[in-house]
Length: 362
Image (cartoon, rainbow, N blue to C red; front, side):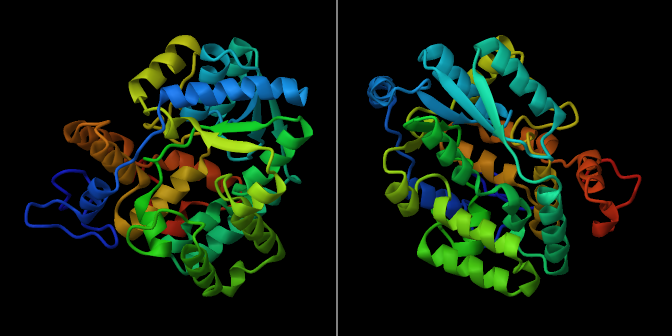
């Protein structure tokens, strides 16, 4: 398979083109639009403001950290509680597809840092039913533009997090998202090459058009979830700025550089954190539906989100290409036992993809 000579994106990615040197247009685009971080000094000043804001609000907490039990949210909680000395409230969605290791990680984190973790949940079976139905519909008409429908039941999580922040008089929400994990080929499948924001008018309209191609997606629950998603997206939308103007949402790694080695040093060395033993990657193992999504991507374009993640890290100088190639061989594989576990929860099996019962990885 032909791959970019600079990053590792394969020729199967939609919209990809290579110049005479074998460099892809995604590398050339990001060279013109580099990520600019605000910096540690600015972040320190920002946090100092919210130290005082806690007092003004008479709140128990300085900030909320959305918590999944995965790598980045766990590190953000540690950073805020241990390094900045803030009183952190972690908020977790009781996702029925959360890996067992992620649950253990959250328990260890709570005990080690002394932080409170509150959960919100939906009616039993609601998430599973929504996932199963959307998966069935997607398999009838596979499309990159609608893979995220598999995650729709839990996508409006900022709807709940802002409500919890308001109830607890907390003025700051800080998460572990970073600019390098925004998957280019997912965004571009909706908005066209170079799409940066899925909440742009063009991207939203294109997404709706793709959903409407399969009228089966139009159910009361999906409509409610999609409406909430469009209103809250990543926590920074006009709706939230209007109705929650006193609450600020930000992301740690839009201020300071993402340092994978430092993050893993903290997690493994200080929190006793672990990745799932049956998942080769420490990234996004917390929700096991991720393996289903990557199976969908693999079948459509013979690539996973890790091809894009590692490529963006290479462009940012955070990873060498040789390291990325070695890691994609290992972490790009999908453990089908995880796929089986997810599907079993909704009464289905891998035969949906015509996969052999004997296969271990794909």
